[in-house]
Length: 189
Ligand code: FES
Image (cartoon, rainbow, N blue to C red; front, top):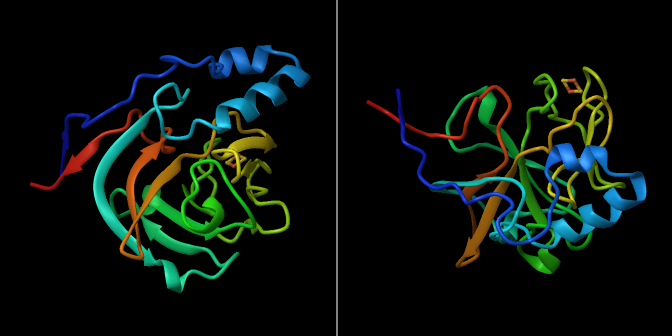
């Protein structure tokens, strides 16, 4: 397998005043809450503070096969442990969500702190995944995987979803998957 050039990266911080992670951490608590909510509303569009990289489209599930709070596991954009991901239907709208009430979201399943496995850590009552079994980081699935507690500082990469004819497809990833130094499209020889 060889690396191919990056297919598409949307420019970060282009138009809207989302904060960089450094600025986010430097800002006061009240300011970060307000600004984080504001940024969550511009999911997968230009101006988002995180990079969105498009990958080959992959069918994940049928809409009619989704049951609320029952995660569906899949690999994206490639096969392998680093790409383990999950799709889940939350109660109510989520940033970047699709389907009924924009409630269906998908994320990479590896903790962005030091690679801990997040499988089995979905908590329906709070719409979070975590705590990570290694150092307890928890991610908010309604807010693009933002860290809400623990040692992690990087947002959990979100898988962009689209619906066509009742089928759910993964089409892109927002954020850097743990273990990669950049988002690339991998091409088989
Ligand atoms: S690896 Fe998940 S919190 Fe450290």
